[in-house]
Image (cartoon, rainbow, N blue to C red; front, side, top):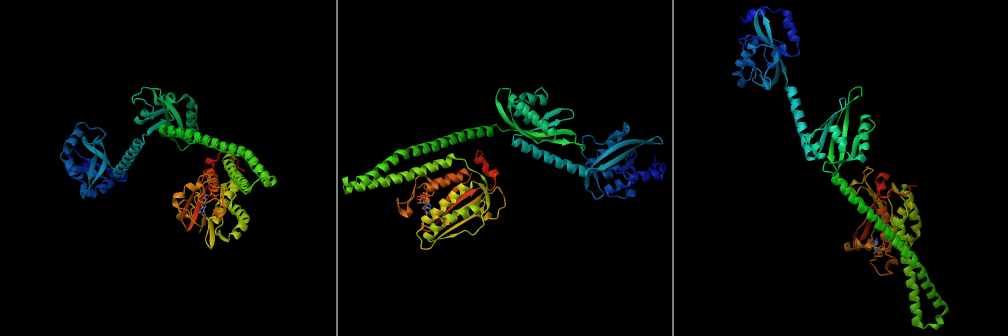
Length: 522
Ligand code: ADP
């Protein structure tokens, strides 16, 4: 039947209806001529409707597919039935300007007056394809990421209680991927009996929305070996809040756990041996004081009551004995004090260092005047989480040293602080940044080779009585106090020009408490 004759059988409403359809539509006869198109289809291909009617259908097909098309078309008319076109192949349309776009086509036979036509509906799937490619790229990236992190992915259909594992999951449980049992029972059976309840409980709590699923557990491989796994997952819910599924990951943390265990053992041993050293220092210094006092007392009695029995040389030696035993007592007192700093608990609390420093400066005021030292504190000091008395001692020791070890005409000391270890972060507001305090002087300075040595017990760089004397314990105690607060103490200096001691403290308990978790918090 000629094209125009077929058209006569359509009334205007049919054209109107198909023009309103949301997909492109056309009617094609057995010869492959376009009998009718809707508005959308003409638009999709960049034609006017009237330009397409009567044209061979091949004008809408890219050149490279045209030669095969008549055979496909005839194949349809041999067994006409509704079906999608080009099963398993990507289909493309060609616009009037020659550009191509991906399409999906549905074919339906339509008999009009004993003549079969094909009624085709066509969707432009450019957007869909783009999304598919995007998703494929994302999945590829995800796969690469999980593979390189040796992560296994699991998906649990909560409604049907079906758990699916990817191949890496099986590897994490030491199982071949073709393992027979259903993954949920594989998981539960592999869990270490001591961890089973907690792991399943964590999963249930996540399903109840009470906490995130992010937990660790041990699994036992078929060969009997233990492995630590961290499991994390998210619950997918419908709009009513009912659980649909959980998707998550597992990864092996055995290496970290082993390293943690070793570290914990070493730290424990170190703490124990430090404690023993403190105890030893305490006991020896305490016990040594007793006989020392005896030596001092007897030499004093010798000098006072028996001076006439001694010649000049004997008296001088007796005086030296007194002086040395006093010195020995000073050293033992310092040692005793040092061992106490390791033994007693810190009274940690949020402390206003303005108040602490103010108190220390008041007690040092007279000494500063005597030494004619100008002390500058130009900042308001912050609040930090610390033991006020101990931090006061730190400032006192450093300021006293800065005052002592200065031979300049015009002596000055500056006390200040900044946030963060890099000085340029002076305005950092992050609470995790430590506060860096400093005590700076224009004194004699320290040679770089002594930067470490000065913190050693009894280490002095000068003769016994030079610069007002000392025990060589001040910096050792200061360092210990700073470290007990979880901070660090270090020195920078230019020999002959001056020295700066820095120490850090944490502003909040969170960063400080790991060092002093057992201390009383006042
Ligand atoms: P002490 O002051 O009792 O000798 P410290 O442990 O406080 O003991 O100090 C150890 C040594 O470090 C001091 O003997 C001194 O040589 C050196 N030192 C400490 N502070 C300063 C400073 N601000 N400037 C120069 N040298 C210093």
